[in-house]
Image 1 (cartoon, rainbow, N blue to C red):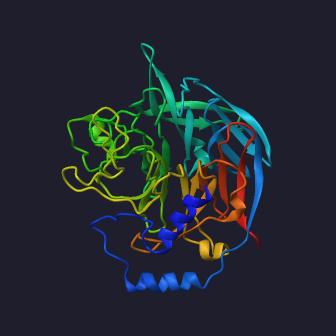
Image 2 (image 1 turned 90 degrees about the horizontal axis):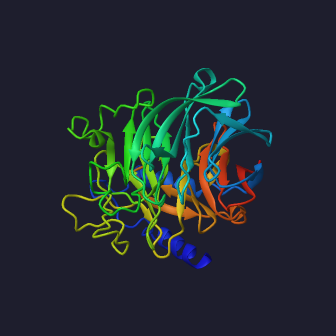
Image 3 (image 1 turned 180 degrees about the horizontal axis):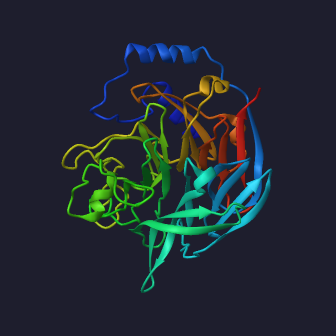
Length: 392
């Protein structure tokens, strides 16, 4: 995978790696250039990588829950696990309605900010429906004090489309204002991304306590219930969501045979995926020939794809030149890409440290309170959670 990665880096260093940028956004201002110059004077730190949790099978997501504990999902096993100091135990679920098929199973996690008292957390997972059908759904849980059992509190949102399990999404992100953002896949159904009455190929925003659509969503008063949830549309398979310190929202998604994307999300925006008739994956990831305005990616992989997945913003002065970058995991490329965007959201450069190129497929990235990164592998067997920090 070295050749395409070098090509992407070369484009990024030339200011072209981000591909099309959103038409309604200004170019970098002098303050951006000054910030970039300051970053250029910082060194890229050596990274220390250790295996924090071992003996896993496709850990789709990981989140800290306090007192040195990590909560994680195993997609294909449909298991929830807690680990402390590398010692792990399985969490019993009060409801085992988890459908596993293809790329769908027990996937993303979000943990309430008040978890220490509420013990509330959220999953996005495949589910079984009456009559033998399936969907993808967002579920609220409450953990017991011993972290040995989780009780289902509420199915916040169900009916996210699925077919074989391909393109099941599904990433969760609790936003600073309290809303829950959900990134969904198109279920490999061509009409879903552009159909505002479908929950597939979208980002959705909802109340994490009630499951109601956020009242500030762009179509909050629409007659269609599904449309009221939509925040952005025209996505293929959202795998990563991250909120920058300035409040801006970003997504990462898988391309077809080309153009994995990192997108800056704008309320009500169309990101241009429209694989019709049928499910035609030869179309561009962002089709600017569609009616209305489409928003271009801030970074794209080109051909071939890297299978970009989870992402998190890096924080802490200990990270030197990597502080403030977006760390993006890549499954196929087996790398962690540190992407620097200026204050206006335009790509400046991409770095891929060699220290993270020896662990195979990388899926999820979580930034912890002290600035460490938690990164899950997705090799199928002998998977791990990595803890990554700058050498001190």
